[in-house]
Length: 120
Image 1 (cartoon, helix red, strand yellow):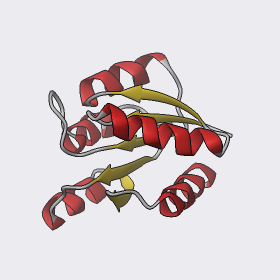
Image 2 (cartoon, one colour):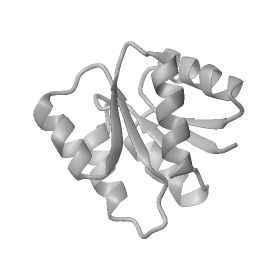
Image 3 (cartoon, helix red, strand yellow):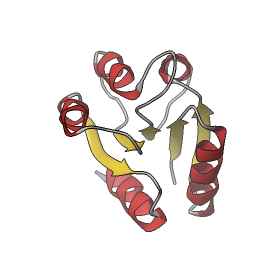
């Protein structure tokens, strides 16, 4: 169905998202922060990126700013975070995020957002 890159510093969150998405037929890869995600994106193709905001090394907004400078085509990005201010949410959307979803997860909402982002 599609390849999804999961970017989050918490292994448990990545594992839970992976289990949910793989149960729906998606293939997932994981990165623990924005720098690792950028390195993976240089080597592999993904149909979607789901990223946290608060991460060490390179947070989600900084990752998205750097990622947005890459040449097209680029897969869409969904922010999935538990700690984001309204100002940061606006920054994320202006930098190109397709959606901002809140933790704790609502799996139906995540699956719906993933399906919509990949099909657009």
